Image (tube, rainbow, N blue to C red; front, side, top):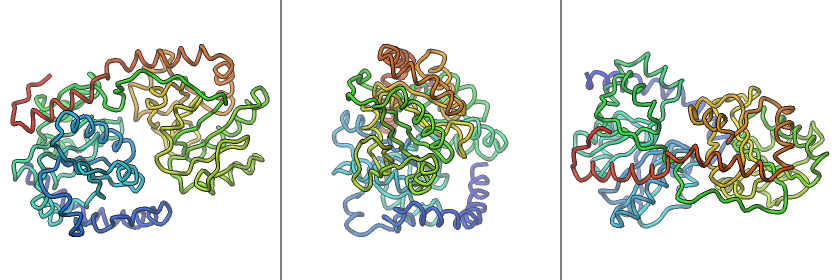
Length: 426
């Protein structure tokens, strides 16, 4: 059955790739950065890079920014436990690659994700011969897994994510997708409720191990030190949301004149579009990429890798891709700002982060808002009362407690896998 599904996958992959190629090329033009290491996307490495990579690295694939964060956290912990280990981390997006390149070292090599065509993949796996292939959250490449299985290389899906949308797709194509998952040696789960869902998709129970979510794992308590400025940070916003946030800020400034606004769009290439949107409201914003700093006028953070540092400065954080007006919905990561000690506002559309988003709201650790008016209503008391903000952060910490130690638990399972130990279902 596995051979049949792999054959069907390869039969469909190339025409689908050709259909998606125009949109991909358009994104390259709009976002930029995709040309960096372009040949690596076809499995081609220059001699210097190939020698530096060598063989027997642990290969982690992380599709984009969120998954890259998980990969780096795992790799850092694993390397601390096993100093001789070396990593190869691939990512699909230019933003993810930019973040990885800042973490490059003798033991960590970032690459652009190679296309999963059989001729490219089989040659690459034989050449690199990774000591393990680890994929983060939801991004599986069947030819890569099959090539590793042929060479006896262990494979795993870490921090497995099953959004309602992907679950629906996998359920419809269960006969096709279950064999891919069952080729893996290990799948680590983030929530106890996930096990039944994976089993219902035809995944073998012995592969599943509950570890908690690496994203929500933090060795330290929340950092609650703040600047003197009141800062409203709108993080990972999508089209439609900046207008609501900026309008709310204009209203809030009447009561809090020193309130500063920082907007970080999920896609920085939208900077000029956002500028035009805010201009209609009579707002002029400054670009971080042009050297702008925090001022009375909004700061548009259109650079890569700075958002995390702003969480620890922010008084309140709104996390985007969640409002009804957003062109994309499902939510973005609301955990990082909470871990940094900032109370969080989210919209009603957070399917990508359920059930955690609802758990946070029920515990009073996050607040849902639908529009500008609701943002103003819930933000006013938070700006006025530091104790309310601290209470939200403390509540979040309680909700996140089961996930503490998730990184170490994942490391222990992968170590057992690589040492040839038999993993017992837990």
